Image 1 (spheres, rainbow, N blue to C red):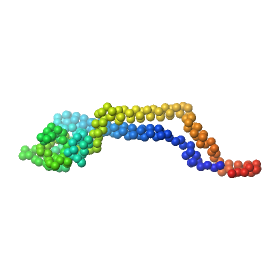
Image 2 (cartoon, one colour):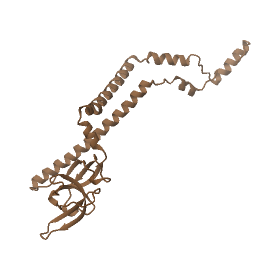
Image 3 (cartoon, rainbow, N blue to C red):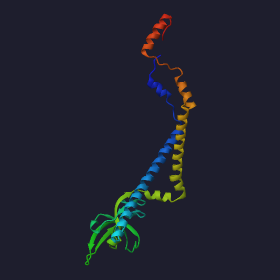
Length: 249
């Protein structure tokens, strides 16, 4: 009897249980979440390092400036649809002559409606006073009118250079106890337990040199009636069976 080796391997390959499949899906999702958090933490650490270096340089030169980078969560719809509520923004400090009409900036407002609040609006005009001071006129993309008060350069924290959609919801969720448990603790424990089980199985198999009993029994069952005969063996067997007057099927 001649059989295809490919079919043999396909038949002997063990099937994964539904529990194993679900666990692998969970393990993948947990890793994606953890890697995403690690990337965010890495970016925060990088920005902090640049901020610290810039701060030390300014102190050494005796200069007082806004931080080089900053991050904020948007809580009002004044910049919709450009920037939505719960989006995160990254800003970078810019020199006065680097700001132009169309830039989105974050600043401390002197407008009576938002007095003392940190606002993120777009520059729609630049005006120069008689004393040479430059002021910026701003407006929210979703507002019908411009802001009443002009913005001085000293009130500006920086220009928006990056938007991260909906990250505010993650921040809000992580500040809750159940959110910390669901997004941090449980995925970490799941990955750790999964890896420990894999290490234990690997070590056990390396010491015993044997397969699991279930897998071994399954392979024996699948291979019980399989016999591979090479062409030379077929010829020899044919001659032998002819001598013994045995019919070959």
